[in-house]
Image 1 (cartoon, rainbow over the protein chains, first blue to last red):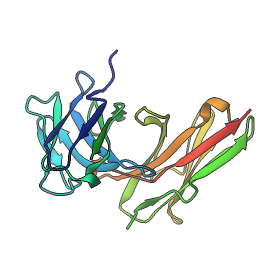
Image 2 (image 1 turned 90 degrees about the vertical axis):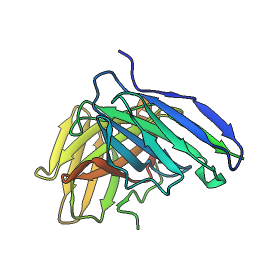
Image 3 (image 1 turned 135 degrees about the vertical axis):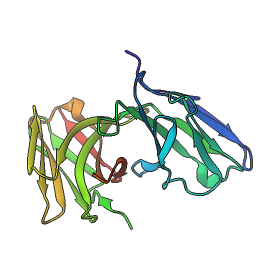
Image 4 (image 1 turned 180 degrees about the horizontal axis):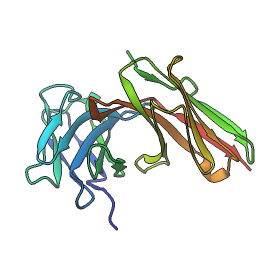
Length: 113
Length: 113
């Protein structure tokens, strides 16, 4: 079956621009997670959803970052006024429930020039 | 303050030998630990996990050991195969917030034929 998909796979933008990153979880998975991975580091938790609601958004670095999951399936991570320090691979994962194994997508590589 | 640490950035072993990857944590609230494997340009893939009520969990060639008093866990791969060459991440979560995982920075394992 289809795994977690993320679009675009690569995104290059200029400092100050707005970007949206999309995640399509595995069908039927109620939990969805966003992570950010900088070069040479492990994934850093940003936010996770249980259904449509954000259960924990404590990892969002500041108010330029926002994520939604309006119908409990697809999620969008939105970054306003991008900065060069936002450059990283943004990973999405989903799981059947919060207690189950997380399945990761391939990530979106964001480069802010 | 990094709560999950993998102090060895890289490890090289001969095919057929044992690979031992180590991980230390500082947060005593962590009660569930996972190992992920990651190939280039792919998302992490779940490998094996252990709950804090156990000190060992085995799955085929992979065994995870947990020493709670030392706040240390290790992943043993026996026998190592060239296809095991990848980056291995240790991650931890607390039962009070199972959806939020904290990752180490990874260890790159190279298995030489």
